[in-house]
Image 1 (cartoon, helix red, strand yellow):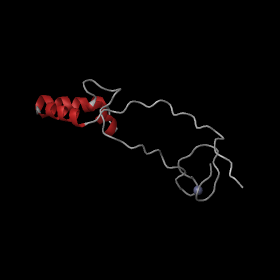
Image 2: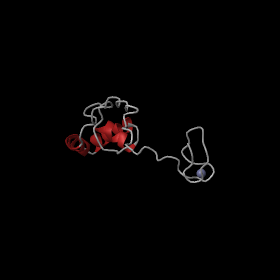
Image 3: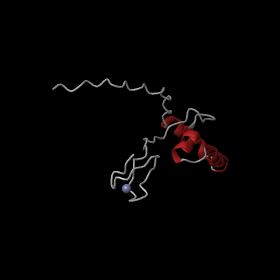
Image 4: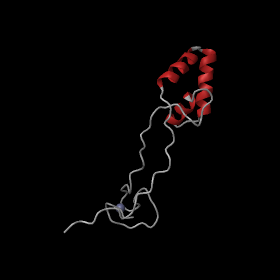
Length: 109
Ligand SMILES: [Zn+2]
């Protein structure tokens, strides 16, 4: 790969050019959505999804939520509301089909 700014060549994958500091490639910015987790759930996946969204340990979210339920009592209602409002995480997509190489039509002269 080459630096888009100064043209320095890198054999390994780097995020930033160490010569001029330019970003080599934009990091994958997957659209984050607040969804109920499919794979990390105890009841409905609300805490798991919230933990994933906030990039914190879902167990910590659960703990805080449980404390809120015990001491405040509003946590339970909030959980039910979140359960209803938050969509479920979409099904994990199967591996993307390999792009057929050489399928592009040759330019006609
Ligand atoms: Zn550079």
